[in-house]
Image (cartoon, rainbow, N blue to C red; front, side, top):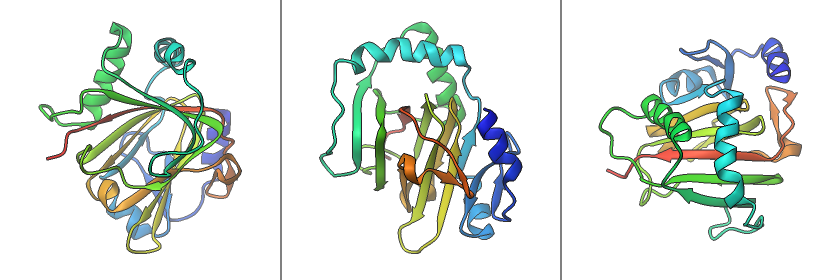
Length: 215
């Protein structure tokens, strides 16, 4: 958190999105117009869960993850240095956390993808630019960012426009509609993990991701 506050104090570029929830500079972009136009479709909510809640999630996830080896290739070459799993059933504490994620990201009654996707990135791992398959995922992606601060970069498919999202540890990010379909998203390598000119060291990172069903 000290690192995050230092970064926020130094942010001074004009293309900065001040979120409705936090009024903190967690999103910067290639132009003010882009940041403003996507303002309702990209959210970062810092401190969405507590340290204790993060611990509860890790307590459930770590035993299964430890049985897997980090992989350094992916079936569509999108991820490097990762372990992943899907989880349908959770203990009461974690289910309560995930219900908060669902309430924050999806309108009531939205049909959701049943299993929750869990992606564990090694410190040296990264996610390359990609768009999640429309066959398996609907208009909204919502993910908890555990264990490490990280930078998510969105790039518009048909231009050089981009957004950088600072994802603090224990934050929630949400991508909707155009940000989901018309922009690739990636998680930067540690050596590339810079937000608005400031280094944001990347450690091992786990994301816990909820999605809605395709229309």
